Image 1 (cartoon, rainbow, N blue to C red):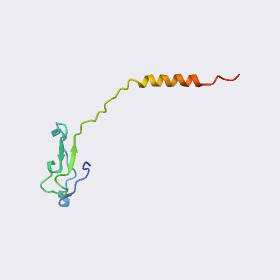
Image 2 (cartoon, helix red, strand yellow; image 1 turned 30 degrees about the vertical axis):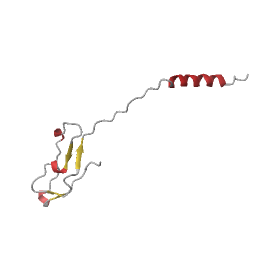
Image 3 (cartoon, helix red, strand yellow; image 1 turned 135 degrees about the horizontal axis):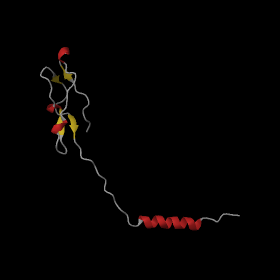
Image 4 (spheres, helix red, strand yellow; image 1 turned 60 degrees about the vertical axis):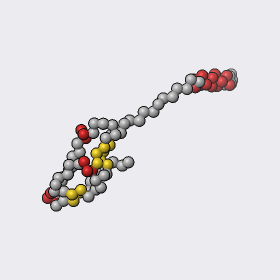
Length: 92
């Protein structure tokens, strides 16, 4: 899902908010979200963006599980041994 970076607002020129602050401290739990409807918009402005648009979301980090293969090391050592056995002696 795409997070919202811009917000369409309608207001009189002198009443147009120069910025809209988002309080992220309310997002205390995993998978918390803030939608446009949660923003503190001045009464002199009207939001034109859909009120259900996502502004911010907390996502838990994804951790890849390490898988250990017991036979891999033995195969690598065996491959190295074969490589040294097949090397031709240097000609003098």
